[in-house]
Image 1 (cartoon, rainbow, N blue to C red):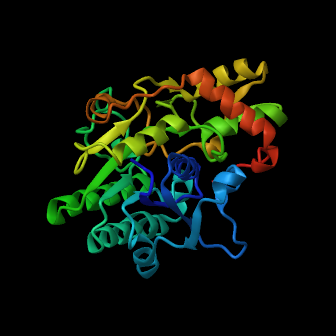
Image 2: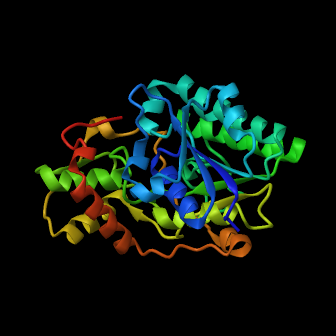
Length: 328
């Protein structure tokens, strides 16, 4: 299926994007990786890729907010995976307009390019944060959307644009809604690598609220979901959850990680890491039946196995993390 296919990944320098790009190259796709332009020619997490794989990737630098640039890289592609986004929730409180420009206008640029150049399939990336605190569990795709942070509001706007392009123009777009993904290369803006990196070199583990519950999927399973969404026949126009269907509290994850690392350190809640009360999303747990039904997708990697692989990565790359300070 993938051999000879021309595929574009936006946000390819990111956590999930870099893993997806690698998987596409290994599967035989002719892969273009779009990374954010920077003066140092840095390629983000693609720098962790196997050298032989990386040589097979066409890397282009630019910004998703520039429509001319986006049109140029989308033209001629068979499939587009759109992952480029600003994702840090705390920073969205400080720079909400930037999130609208990147997440909403950037998505509009991709959608319009796909429409103009008759691209065969667009896989658009959403987030479980758009559901807000669960009104019912497990959360199915019909659950109301609640903008509890500027970040989630911007992603709701992007999702609705994708829906409108399908309904208005017949654009072949599928929206994937991953519940929290974790694994190697994830930055310390996420709580699992934060716990691991602090456990290695601090006297205590400092986190935000310990009560929220999260449904965590290992990155290779999320990548498999993206690839399934690009090939399944019944997914166009649909929104599909990717998750395990099981959730644990942030505090529970911390205790389990420390057990796996054979480390005994206190876990404390730090005021500066707390979200505003009405913005905190207390429980996310996915209903993943639709993904199983129409994409034959289900997670394969157990929580403990995924945590072990993530711990190993953080141990091997301590310079990738700044455990001595809180980065929004």
